[in-house]
Length: 398
Ligand code: ADP
Image 1: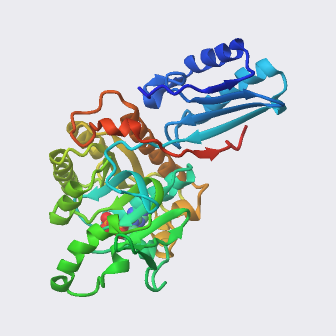
Image 2 (image 1 turned 120 degrees about the horizontal axis):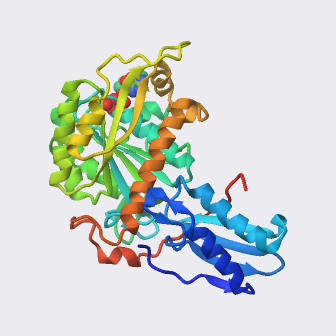
Image 3 (image 1 turned 45 degrees about the vertical axis):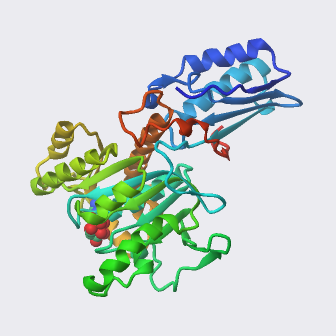
């Protein structure tokens, strides 16, 4: 469980702390298999003219976030009497779930790297990666998106960045290193192999450029502080994918597939690759799962239904979500705005947000677990000592 941190308590009666303890102990946080008190989230309870309370959650996007906030507020208001006198501040501190590969003072502090992969091309991997990035950012996470799909980088189109000119950069004279500055859209720091390499050039010229460019995209970018860097991998399980998986410490991988059998066989290959390099698989996302036509709410199951669930169960993975085949997903991407950003209140955006909640919980669970999986990358005693600046936030509904 999380390391105990003593909260700062000033001018507050022991009864009030007991009331808080009781409220939080009785509140289950099912996504982290614990109760809210055991998460050790209290940082400050200070009574001056008003009662100020600060809590730090282990991630943004916890489904239990509002329940925790309400439980605290209720316990405090019962004590103080007037809700107007209580100031509740919610912070999040996303800890690394694996040893950090990208940590350069004043340049980059990337807490978690998530690979989005697929057994073959055209299944919607980039679409899923982009919409997941937007959904995670909308939950409060600091997110980056790295398009490493050397065969067909699509992030520049999906985020309307084509023809924006060269990526800007700067040089650190002390270390003689150049860093690129990623463009930001919808609060997401973006980097694409398409910014660095002429992807229309024949592969024979691109090959050597790609090998060095794919590592530069991780290490030579002014990422700033990121809770999650989502990497859109090239499709398949070839050399580039394996190199990235081996050279970068990854917190988790997502596999995207369509429902057809052939594609599902590719899922097995992708899962085996991640197992081989000890990368935990977060789960499977079935894209183009069923068809929804414009103006009809009916779910048309074009491909056999249930394949993803069956395959995932066999491989010991969970299904993170089923995304329908909807014309607006394609048209939004073509227009340079992922559907989750274009229609944040839509049902589709809701589907991606549900996946984002699960992805956040997966990492928080890994990072706070006392006994981590038998994985040399994850078993890092230093991890617990890495102090992380916290991000302040007020929940809107309180
Ligand atoms: P990949 O990265 O796997 O090669 P893309 O994300 O580029 O695949 O998607 C391939 C094409 O399918 C794109 O034109 C994209 O807009 C479209 N597409 C992806 N997912 C969906 C979906 N759920 N509904 C409709 N079109 C989709």
